[in-house]
Length: 145
Image (cartoon, one colour):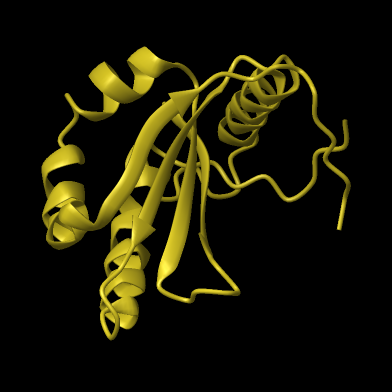
């Protein structure tokens, strides 16, 4: 593994220890731990499929653009991606990678970030077609771009 340009961050996502080698080393270890979780298939995926009312797509994307700041700060959230259907542009899939189902259900839902996150996306709850957790099968391929 090659580590370069490490920026140490606090739990709230703010930059800490700028120029501090100990803070950078601590952050590098955190990054390696996240990488180990991803490599060992320890993470679980939450899949949320939406069919957004026509004309509301910009508001929906803006809500998640704002809400992502809350996900990014969570130690239990390993990553996320919101994708839009090419064929029907009002259909979306949100994939959130959690370190565990408990990390999502207890860690996130019990955190101070949960209420402001929900407030931003609540207007779209009735447009959810699926919201489920999935576990890895080990059958996968990820290529570098």
